[in-house]
Length: 493
Image (cartoon, rainbow, N blue to C red; front, top):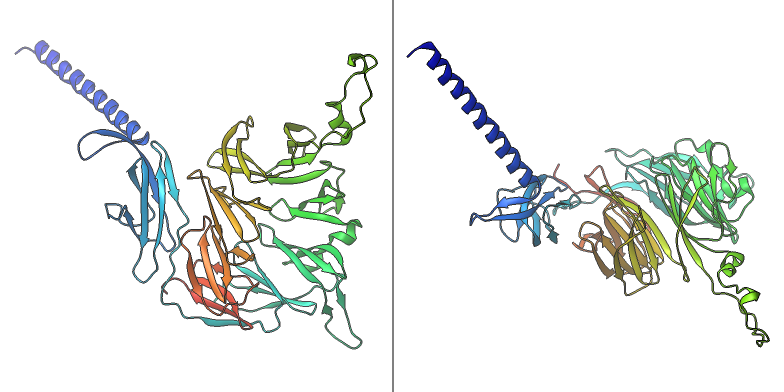
């Protein structure tokens, strides 16, 4: 065979190999694209579009059962492709209690279960701190710091993320009005009643609402540098109806005074002009403010006035009537001046603004009707009906749920499932054990639920009501009992 023929055959082999390689790459990419889009080959060799489930847990390594069966997805902190529709997911781990939930997988979409928590069964309470004189306590958002108050002006800051607790005393007498110092006494008395205590996200400030001698005052307590605390009521000489922290370090606040919304710059001790008049409800996310406000009488009457030239001559006069109240939904940036009016309504409402995955939502709550809107164009996405009218609204830490409640009635909108669940708690006092789990007390029992009211469990007995409970460093459960701060290991150690 001459060299020319060998070269031709070699060239054909190279071309054939490259063609096969290109086809293989295209096939692999196509298969991967189909898998990413949710398509999967079933056991009967039919192609079905499915969804993806990701399961995480505390502690990790829990066994996963899907519809009562184990599979190659044996442990948490992993993923599995599932057919669309309902599935029962159960988690268990030796020595721990169990967790379960019915989920709904949507084809081509990811469903995340990133909040399940299992508790060690064999837990032994231990005394962590004497709290005989405690009158109130609050835990920071990261669950690492505890403030304990008493009837004196010396309160305690406790870092509870350490094996050994060492309280630090702070003197609050310069910042609250409801204090007194008896002659010859070294420690003053605190006579105020704490109505509200909210931390900033950096766990460095607490915003207090205090009732002292029938006077309401607001104090921003700097936990790390108490001398930089500020009595907002005294500083601005104003009776604020409400105040909210809107940034991580409590440098910026939103305050309602005379039904008008203002912004407070804490470092410069300056209060802005009116941002929104006649505010009814508002919520903020990052730098945006979503609100509902009552329109002024003049603006409301503009739409109801009838021109004299259009009236019938010699028509009998009708008595003047006030136009019905009108409310407007608005959206604005906290640093800007432009206000976007979205819609009007004849009834007041509650509002919330949130983000879940990459989608942004505006939620309106009018009586018992919940409407989820697309933030971009305010289109209605979904409507829900409750059996009660919520008084309070809270968006989950990652926007994964919206919690609404009135007294002992609670409703949770699960943004992953797109479903509303309602339930009742034993009393009107509840708190957050972590970012996704609620707790309440009943007859001395500490009872916990997921944010949707499921997976109810009793964790401790003989617990003091109206004191907080919390989980620190994912290993300790803290609560108060008979004048003691107690803690239990909730994981193996």
